[in-house]
Length: 155
Figure (cartoon, helix red, strand yellow):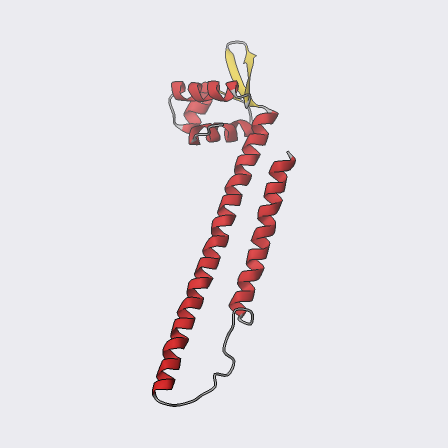
């Protein structure tokens, strides 16, 4: 199924109530012919249905259209969560690389001066509070992603 921004906007509006082509045209700020083309495509896909009331044709979203809209929204949430998860870990990894590079510079300076010092409380990946926070956030994001995927598959 090919979804354009206009088709998604139409489905969202039809999820609220039934509309005519003219009403959707005014609400979405598109020409009647553009809205009509999108409605016909959505009708052919079985996502919207037509109802005639005297001279007016009202479009309404079908159950298939509602499911498609819900799946699309879930996919957007999944993608956002995945990008947040990736961004979170990239930030953490670069922070660790920066920290380790700083530690290497400090240790070289100490060795060059022939001063032997033990570093108390040096941080490791597992003991660092930032790691634990990232791990907790990541766990919640992964659970959220799995839940959304499950919802999509279950439909």
